[in-house]
Length: 258
Length: 275
Image (cartoon, rainbow over all chains, first blue to last red; front, side, top):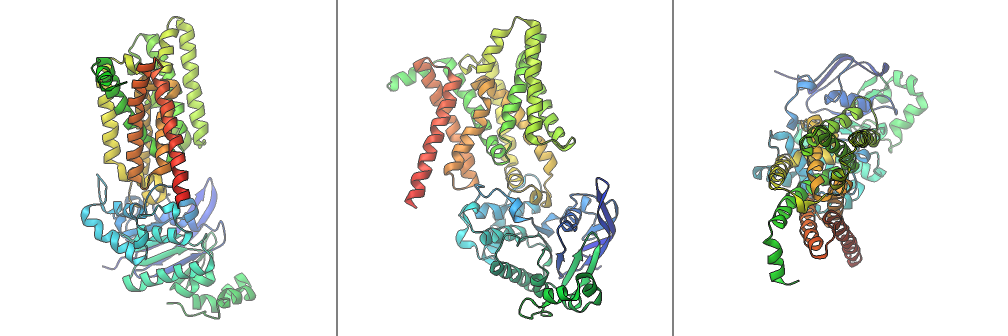
């Protein structure tokens, strides 16, 4: 039976009686690469938190692989990369290998620790993210781009079906950001991992993602980048000039999404 | 001091008991301390030590062995701090400050009403591991071994939580339960450390060895191991120095810990210069 990876139906959420999300509905299917975009305070991170079961919706429903996130138990199927800047202490005394190994805890019950048999999975994640040569370095000694690769390696060490990334590129310079989106596209196309990535950069993510979900407390747009660029509604919402700039500021590559 | 002198020291029962209990307490303090320091919860040890003062005073007031009252009181207070942060949404340092002040205030009031146990209370404030009784050694060993066993069993969960709580949660780790366990273990350890260095200096056993290890270790496991090793070394050397030169044992242990910290800073700088 086909099960949607993520399904939100008429979901609303309020914090201290202040509405944060209102009547949000969308579906993420296996193999999707979805860019979750929107202005600051639009509810993107809240949506991720609801999806992961960190908070409960005020009304409506959310399911993860067909299950309520509060009761979900197969955390090895999910890889999560939180916002890098708030994610960890840069002087944390753990090596790259120790950090990547933490991802494997999702596969085990008490006592949770990476088993000997897990070793190849760590090696593979380090290899895929091209960080094998820095495996014994402390995470705080790495550049922003390298740290981001480590966090993705940790998220994908279990071979997850769904990778959720919350503004992973906020601290990266534009060149590394493009590289990063490209790595994700490869993971999506070669391993079939479903990806949900929160970003501010519609233009960049539009080139790589198969769908865009534009959120501003409610769903403003859900569709492909090509559809976004020709949508009269979006032209009206952003203004046609802004829509043109978003869609064409990357060397006219609109419509080349994978 | 020659080898015979050292062996002579070791033949004394009170030295053996001090070294045994002190080493176990030092290991539980330093390994737990690594997680507390990295989670910026260092001062919870200090706050709970103040509550220990209140617990000890309460025990003396009611004529009960102080440790038997201090342990449940401090554990309940640690949960109180957690609840103040979670439910009343206070900042952690504010919650620690409030609960620790209450502990001290309760101790002062009880001491004042009783009027007769000020000298005994003084011995708890500054500790005296050389006078530790056999039953206290057994209690310290059993409880410290329990704390160390929990840390070993939950090592990766604690590491994951300390590195990044949200990701730990997204790995299916019950972060709320682990946080509760962490503060309860801290409460237990603080009470145990009271006999080693005294209420006034407990937090140094939780903070200084981990901070020293953080200067030089090259992995998380290395940090834990080094913190435990330095902590035990400072207890062993502190006990010997205090007996040899008639110094207060608790303060000697703390000063040695600080010496190790200064040496680690020097080593770190030399290593950085060497490239």
